[in-house]
Length: 126
Image 1 (cartoon, helix red, strand yellow):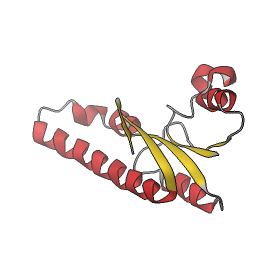
Image 2 (image 1 turned 180 degrees about the vertical axis):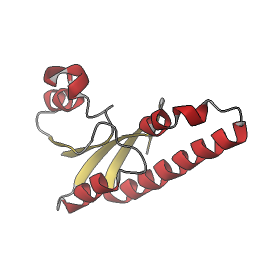
Image 3 (image 1 turned 60 degrees about the horizontal axis):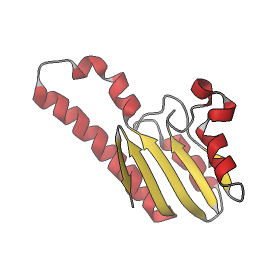
């Protein structure tokens, strides 16, 4: 079985947890028979994930699972924007992030048997 970790520091968390407690290490320990590839990068947003997705596509293999974590850094980078009083503008920004993440999720669904998405604080499975 082949598993891809895609997205942000929720999955690429070794800097924060240490190697022994990182998501990558924990998945490898729990599923030693699986090949796990960590494409995730700390700080990635829905606007700059394309190179990561391109690296996933260059792997000539059959993927079984993709774990995708995305969206939190979009909001972190827009904290000042989120504090403005114009609620309509805040909603537009959040809708734009959701639209980008939805497109990335849909693209991954075409290439993986199962995609598990962690988006902000919500989890969705397909």
